[in-house]
Image (cartoon, rainbow, N blue to C red):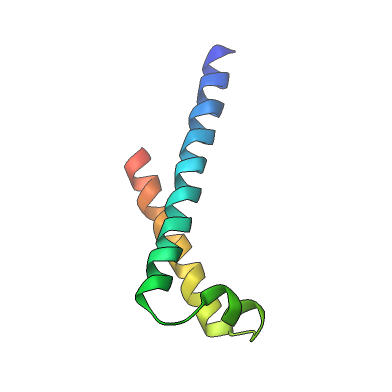
Length: 69
């Protein structure tokens, strides 16, 4: 039982690290370009920019999963 609890806690820690990395990456990319990602995606319905942000999240997830293994 303790091993299951330890694995759950480890998973939550890795999820928190991923969320923090994803938010920092979006802010860094957003600061690099002169556009506001959140505004363009939500207000202007820019689907291409949404796909770019989604690929950024997927890339970070793949990177983090390779670090965990």
